[in-house]
Amino acid sequence: MAQNIYDDPAFFEGYSQLRRSIEGLVGAPEWPALQAQLPELRGRRVIDLGCGYGWFCRYARMQGAADVVGVDVSEKMLERARATTQDEGIAYVRADLDQFEPEQAAFDLVYSSLTLHYLDDLPGLLAKVHRALVPGGRLLFSVEHPIYTAPAHPGWSSDVDGRKTWPVNGYQSEGPRVTHWFAPGVRKVHRTLGTYLNGLIAAGFRIAHVEEWGPSDAQVAQTPALEEERERPMLLLVAAQRPDRG
Image (tube, rainbow, N blue to C red; front, side, top):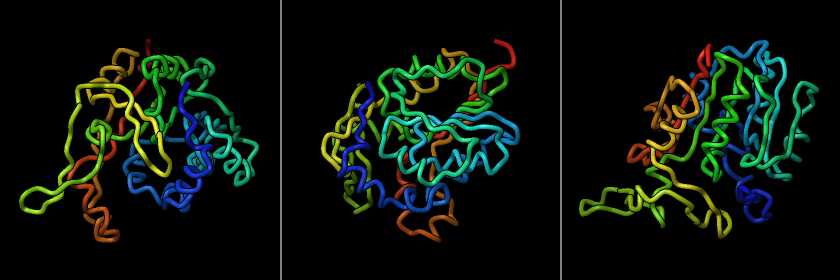
């Protein structure tokens, strides 16, 4: 079962102060890159795995999606999502994604933002997502980049010239990583880049786009603190397609 750290009061309070929690999609610097990989949403059926506050669910409906399902393990997240949603076309479901069974051939788009690195059984989920998509349907997700998740004690250091560096160790040693982020004992699962991509291929997907996300010049000019994100990729963005046949 996936860890439900988001229902921890200290964690939830800290997370709620993030810019992406307050401003929604526009507060996430990687959003423009994700948005560029979205298919036409008008009339489409959409599911958001790890929907959090429901920001993407509401966006999809604003873009004309026929109906949207948001899934999350956190009751606190879903309470916030329901309180800020007045739309009968959006349904929120509480479920552990390591055990969740979406309806087969029911969706045109499966979307997931910064969620899959919490799960133990990624191959199982990818197989279920493939079955849940109609032929030609798209999976679009972001995760913490393997360079970011690999270290046992992630954090910046400085080289002899004073330049920030991100030490990487244990990269090939996949498995749980436990760190302190808003609360002690936050558990995530490190996987290599190859594991993510080969997992998609094994599940029957065609990989359409891979991006080791970094901020644009305009974003750095607007938010100078993003400059350090150019020193190493923090996020991995992937778009994949279920082939029209198979």
